[in-house]
Image (cartoon, rainbow, N blue to C red):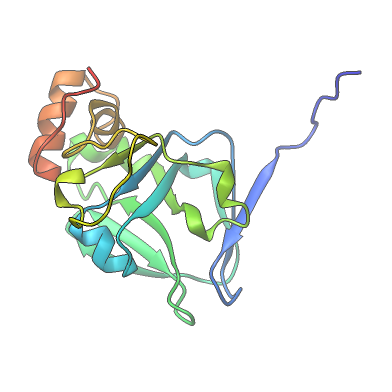
Amino acid sequence: MLTVMSEIEWQYGGCFCGEVRYRVNGPATWKAGCTCTTCVKMHSAPYVAWAGFERDNFQIVEGNPTMFRSSKHVLRSFCNNCGSTLTYEKDAAGVAELEAAARLVYIAVASLDDPELYPPDEVVHGREKLSWMEFGDSVPVREFTSKSAGELQFGGIDSDIAADLAKRHFGGTDRGDQ
């Protein structure tokens, strides 16, 4: 007998102390690990896994995370009590190429109650990874970012334009997945 879900299946997550809780649903638009120096420093970890969701598929259900502007067009949220990183978001701030990217919210996968649900499909900014960090053959490691990531970050516009914008915004692009 086939069972059809009548409700949206939500996945829950939150900070270490439990003060902030959120929920997400639907498939992730992009799942990747990041080894850029900003993510590494922000997390005090050599690698961070992110899963992106449409803003309408993400809700804070308890608490009030603190927002921090880590760069001109990036906002990150964390629990003010325990310091757990929760999200990464684009702030278009009048830049047309970033408008579509601002519709996404990236959650720190490790903050999910079941982080096994969203394994990364790739690792970006491999050029910046710590020399002792190895991924083996588990996922492709991009030197900068992939075209698919560039397209998501810059609104699903033409692939070549997105790759160029990714190169300017992120410092480069790995064209290995054309």
